Length: 318
Image 1 (spheres, rainbow, N blue to C red):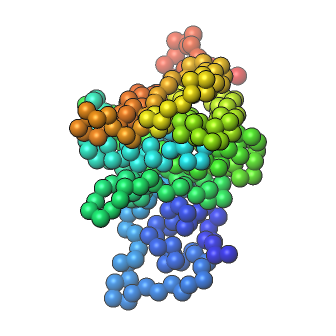
Image 2 (image 1 turned 180 degrees about the vertical axis):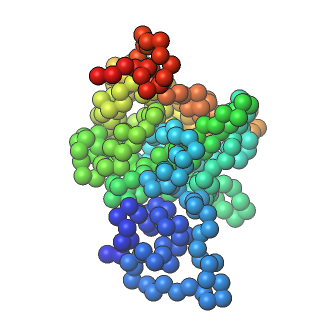
Image 3 (image 1 turned 135 degrees about the vertical axis):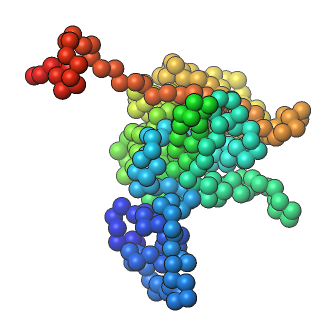
């Protein structure tokens, strides 16, 4: 099987570590095809920037975190629950200027091509029928695709976010067995996320397999509760325009809030209210505003009982 000779590169699923737009033209790629570079313009096929614009991988994190440590948003849910559609809707709202209109203003992204890749199916154009983003593939359970946004406030303070676009199969296997072989990507999200969005798919919870969907979500909620520590969690009902039996809703809420009492709740949909002329959808902006206000817990230093101002001796010796 063709593969990259660099153990830390996950091309072609995620950005080439060497920065090549076409991994087949990378000198490290051990593919079947010959690498042919035009003699007229030998650098035309090379990437001159330290990022490609596509969804980032773990190697790209070092470059992005060089300026400030980004907040990692873990979006946890079953297959086809609407996780990628949620990201695509946020990107389109960002393009309309509807996100970041408060004290936090949009300040750029290193993964615009990655955002476009998932949002293009929701963008209307002549002769193009609207559709949902394609299913996020499992990619062998190695690492999630990470999508970047940066925001800046009036005091020029910068906040950066990385949104993990991970397939639901990872989380379904991880929920049942924390150490599942195919759940490595889910474990990475669980370990590194600064906050979690637990996705509840109303369509699945009202469909012919509602019992299975309820059981899977309850198991997933318990796994998130066991792994999250003190990190914030939001229960996010997707496809809020779909009606769910009240008993089913109460069963899901009990499973989440009994194990995560401080969780918050949102209902979202890409279907806009008839009176909404801006096409904002339902609950999408409110959920994003909540994410923007999340802060990491500060590290508190022990009290100082010394008079020395020398940082080498302020905390004493052992």
